[in-house]
Amino acid sequence: MKPTMFDTSAAARAEAAHRVQTTPPRPAWIFTCEGWDRYVRSEFKPPDLQDCAPVGMEVTDDDPRVAYHRHLLMISTDFLEECLLRARRTFGVNGARSEGLLDMVIDGPAGTGKTFLLRAIGRAYQQDVENLFSDRIPVVHITAPHDPDSKLNWVWEIASFLALTPEPKNEAEARQSRRIQDLILPVHTVLERMQTRLLLVDDIQRVSPGQLGPILHYFDYLRTRLGIATIFCGTGATDIVHAARALVDRRDEALWTAHQRLQPKATEAQLRETVAEERSLRSLLPVTWMDPLPWGDTHQDEQAPFVTVLKGYEGNLRLRKQSKNVLTRRAKELHGRTGGYFLHLSQLICQAATDSILDGTEDITDKHLAAVRVGREETMPRH
Image: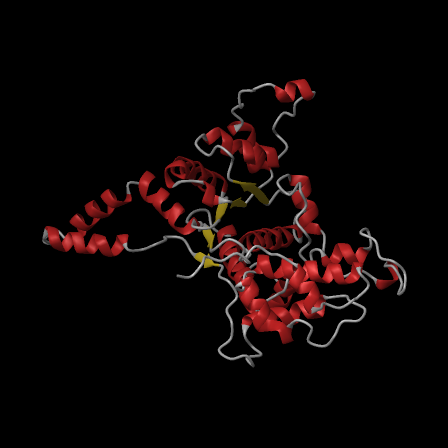
């Protein structure tokens, strides 16, 4: 029996690990329902060596091993598994409620894996729903629009995912400036009929609190009327969403009035202190912080998160002459070069591994690593 959305047992944790490890590369069309469904239903696996160029034969760019090493499997960590289980609890409870649904926030520096986690949560949730139903669109995935000032632009992003936006008939029409149509009613109708329950919103860092504030009330409407919870993702998402909420909900004024009623004999100074405590909260939503992978206390710390991830990458490599501990023995160097950021670490390993296949070395060497630039080479001069 497959784990349910409320299950956090050992079987659920094992399934969470499997879902992380088999998440496929992001297709270019992931912001459409068709592309998202393909992403949800496919699994990324190492290639069969029988389908790859044999030993001694020149390897070309279209070899399955080359394509595989340009992405590599994502490494499942205790943290990622716990995040999936936490989301499973939250959205499992949301699905059983008619009010009081809880949104979420994913925050952290760029390059730490926020978008991967956002999509992994959406993917896992949809897989759970599809185990029971086959005629729904449980998840919608959008990015903040290029012009976030207009509510219609946000609705257009959802409409584009649902294939409700009219496509230009020809190139000439595509070049013409067109007025954005109001698609609120069609979007609402499809979301309701297809029983959508989760909205993934990425790239919140491109939006100011003043721009996000008005659209929060639209998301509130979707949550109240249709039971759709939202996950906001992006660097600084915690502060952006909280500031936007305080702005449009007149939270400060509401807190002051509430505590005046609750403490009728309190002085103004006491009321200010009480309200200040409430205002010190950084977020009213649960926040998942994605940070760079830390380095262990000692060079021999085999349980350090960074070393654990390197071991996972070593196990996923498919190099014919791979040396023992090819990555872990270089752990300190790799952490120094990447800062523990998943983006830079995966780029460094993938580029070096791919080069080693194409040049016939079939092992990651210091020369391969030195030839790769991941964007952290330039530093400010010290005075």
